[in-house]
Structures are given as structure tokens and as C-alpha cells.
Image (cartoon, rainbow, N blue to C red; front, side, top):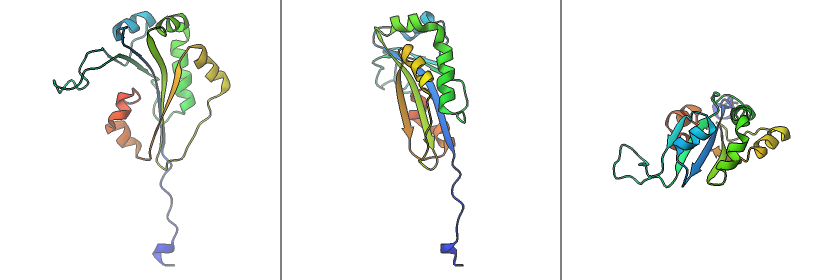
Length: 164
């Protein structure tokens, strides 16, 4: 059979997902968010700080940003990231409600797939918990690319708080 007609095995169906809680505010400092929640963030950036610390002439942040990642690997299911983050802030309901007056509270989720296909199920009981915590859900979908390049080099992935 001619080579152009032979069947080639498809690319591996590599999928990745990530999740974080991202809290932003124009009036509440990231450091204060940490204290009020009693949770150490993976990243906190204060309003007025340089967007690019290596470039002194870069723009300055308009908001303070507090980020806590799920702590799970990118090979975990999206549902697992959500459940881990809900567990993390489950005892903080009252403080999250108080913060919501001056802050945007987001459950920030990312998903990518090598072949551009994929999906997940977020069970109603888990979404109800997210809703009771007052977290908006942001789903960031990434076009087909290898996980290695996204995790290692994609700036958007790191900026949104999903990558390392």
C-alpha cells in the first residue's frame, strides 16, 4: 500500500488541567487577604508593583492579586482541582463573604488538550459548594499545544496562577 494511504497512529491525547483561587482588589492588599483567610498564597502581587519586575519601565499593577493553586498535578481531572480548592477555603465562608465587598473572588480553571478535544463533568453538588463560597468560575481553555510548552513557557498560564 502506498505510504500516503497507510494509517498513521494519531497523536497521543495529552490533556492537562489546573486550578487556583484568584482574589483581586483595588482596595485590599494581597498581604491582608492572606491574613484574613489564614491561608498562605502561592503568589501575591501588590497594587502598584511592576508588571515585569525585571523591567523598571513596565506598567504597574492596577490591582492586588492573591493566588492559591490546587496543589495537584496537571494530570489530575478538573473536578479534582475544584474539590481540592473548595476543601482549602471551606472554613473561610464568612471571610470570603466579607472580602467579596471589595474583592473579585474567582475559581480560576484551565484546560488544554493536544488534539483540541476534551471536556469534564463538574457535579452539581460540587458547583453548589463553589456557589455557596461566592466564587465566580473562570474557565480558561488553551488551544492544542504540548503540555510541556504550556507549563514551562506559556506566560498566560503562569500569570493566571495555574502554572509553576
